[in-house]
Each structure stands twice: as C-alpha cells, then as structure tokens.
Figure 1 (cartoon, one colour):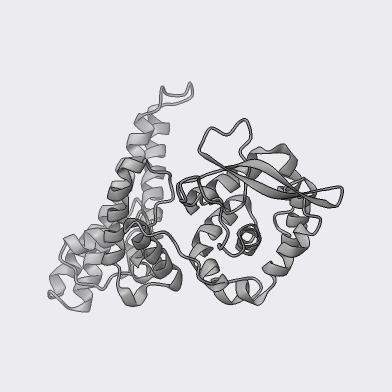
Figure 2 (cartoon, rainbow, N blue to C red):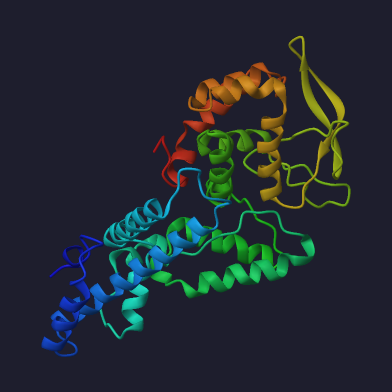
Length: 334
C-alpha cells in the first residue's frame, strides 16, 4: 500500500491501523518494512503540517463575523486534508529526515545526489575588510568539504582566486586567455545583475585595460583594480588615482589629466560598474537593450561612456573573437 493510498482522505481513520498491521507482518530490514517506515514518516510530516496550519489560523487577529463552530470544524477538516495532500506530494522535505530517525536505511533521495546539493555557496555580499580573512577561511572550508572530482571548472577557478586573495598575491594576467579565465566568474555575476551577457563585460574590460596589462596604478604603484576606467566625479567618495588619459574631441586625440576611481579588488570594480550603469540616467537606454549585446554596447557608447569613435566596434570584435569564446564557460559565441 502506498503512502498516497493511506492518506487519500482525512476522514479515513483506518490508515494508521493498516500501517500497524503491515508493521506486524514484516521483519526489520526488508523492503516492506522500509515502505512502512516511509509511510509512517509521511504521516508524521502530515501531522506537522496540520499543526503548522492550525497555528497560522490561531494567529489571525479575530474571527470573521460569519464564523461559527460549524465553519471552524469544516475549516479544520479542510486543513487536515490539505496537510495530507501536501505531504503526499513531497511536503516540506521532512519525510526523509523522519525516515532516517526511525531507523530506515534507504539511500538518499535523488535530490540529495544532485550537483547543487553537493555544491558549496560562495558569498557575494560585501564584507568588512577586518572580517575578510575569516570569511575567506570559511569559504575555503566549504570548498575542502566538496569532493575534488565534483568541482566544475568554474568552481576550481573561484577556488584558485580565493587562494590567491588569501595569500596576498594579486591576480596576474600573463595572457588574454588568462585574463578571461580569471575574471569570468566575476563577469558572470555582474552580467546577471544587469541582464547582459558576460562576454560584453569581459570584452569591455579587455579593451579598457589591454587584457589586464594596463590597469591604472595608484601613486604608490599598487593596482587601482579599475577594469572599466570609470572616472571619479564629484559624487565619488572613495579612493582615486589620476592619469593623463587619451580623449577624443572633434575627431582629434588629446591628453587630459583625469581622476579615476580606485578599488580594493577586482570584485569591487565589477560591483561598482553595475551600480554605475544602474544609477546613471544616461545609460538607461543601453540597459533596456541588455538582451542584445551589440545594441547594448552601441547605446553605451552613444550615451558617452567613451569618446573614442570606434569604441563600440572594438568591443564587438573582442566579444566575438576566439579568445573570449575559447576561455569562457558556456560562452554564447563558442
């Protein structure tokens, strides 16, 4: 007898008796005994759901003007039936837990064997600098608990980046391929926030920094981590660095001393890039075309992101080139 058969009706008072009789006719360890335990676990889960629904009902402010003892009785019966239906369709996931507590030795469900269940979470929230060592250590511990043979290329790349940060070593871009591979996970996160493809963001960062070879430096020689050469306007309150940047006016290239934003990490650069686009009114048209990579970058250029007249075309060539396609994970252009 299946669980659904036992719990098909809240008014069927023979369900538990049937389970008791089945338990008496089976021996521990056989398949029938395991089935009985699973059905008992399902009954417990239904009971828990019923109690939860009852508590929710009792938490209401007051009875309705048309409520009566009869309506309450029918509502309780409906809640009991709902609890049984929910438990029979998977419920809250308590059935497997209760099953193990009762001594069942069934193998974990299919859900527990999925990559997502075996994976580890990577925090993406901003963390105070004083807490970073502890946060990084916690993430590394999560990674170590995962089986090495189950790490995806992206997971392995993120692990390598975390180890590099923890050791104090900066990311080194010794080739265009290295630039794409190391920054790809961060580009994916940024792209998801504004609805564009990661290839667009990687290509723009590649053009702005010469594949990471020419990231702006601070006055002390350290990296500004500014991948998108975002300038520091009057509203910027963070660190800055300055450079005689090449600008185009009326088709002529000239050098101008400009202030640029400086970040503590490349992740901060990606985060600020997203916020910069989302909060600047002139870039809203570009964001409306986020589903179209070529149109997005054209509108970004048209809005004045850069003065180079060939800016959009250069990014599109990089975006559609072999370097990005061969070194990204799941590239739309591969």
